[in-house]
Length: 280
Image (spheres, rainbow, N blue to C red):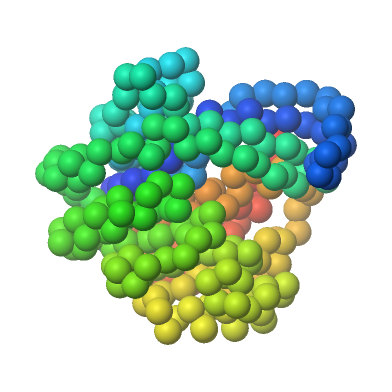
């Protein structure tokens, strides 16, 4: 395998409040929960931490507010070994946050408030130190598309491979699609982008094939079914929270280690299976 390099993540940081409840509320319903706890989050932050846990150095570009949430988020990045030198603290701006409701089956739904994530300064992308020795850029859809495009163009100009986790689902412009080397989407996101309902690995393969008309390489995950090229692993489900981010971070780390795509997807799938079978 090639020498391990490092990854750059441009993305969101959220202070997640996770509420445990017997089920998620229907419209107009009040549900009595059993517990709540704070969790480090944001797809950008989670994926950066996952890259480091998989053995590859990672730098993140993001922003937090000058509040307690921001201190928590920055502290977790540093404790996890993520290089947070390019994370700005914005006076008078609230940090990004979310509330996630976890049901008795381990599945969840969440609401995010983006806060400082919408005010990340694209000028950070001009810093040579950000890109030094990096091989991969990781993007998501929790920051403005204009910033994703600017980051992708800066990365490609320096020879990096660009990975987009198109989550949460939203329309992607032709300008952004043209800069992406690897698109990673789950079943819902694949359906939103391709129009193909994904309920099996065969469906995932069809969606990946359809999306390959717009993107160079496509990876479609299908929850418990696995990814379109790799079946799921049988584990005891504790919580699905953060599983997709674990998959992305591990995938990028394995690619940075020099692994080919099929091997990297297999390792990412295994890491995500382990993640959902343990408590946070």
